Image (cartoon, rainbow, N blue to C red):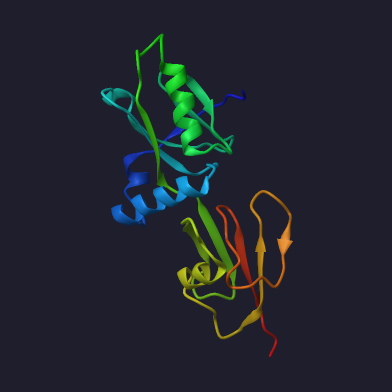
Length: 184
């Protein structure tokens, strides 16, 4: 298992959440159902029942790792919330706690990006079930110069470019939605 440094989420980092608590709970349920795998930039909320010093929010660093008390650095890249819970429970059991009860939830999803001919190009917090149509609406919709038939997606972590995608195409964390300019 690869190990590296962690970045803990500062309260100021966490306070600028864009989702309401109810939306966050719904997104967590959907993330678990869809088998969402975490990546760099996601913020996790880890709670150990009866152990307030072990309950915290952590940012997954660029190497896909977190730092957790008594376990140190943990590689979480590409793992589901349930896999992370099980790993932490198993590593706390015995030497540190008799029967740990760990809950891992999403505090904030990493961003997806919208660029090109949209009203507000920027990075936005991902939500499970996100489509191109929803991503474009989040970015304020098309500009007058947008080519509505030339919407592309660059997949996160690759050079793969999906060209002329439909409005129902799914967008994933870290993806970039690109709206080309019309020449007419």
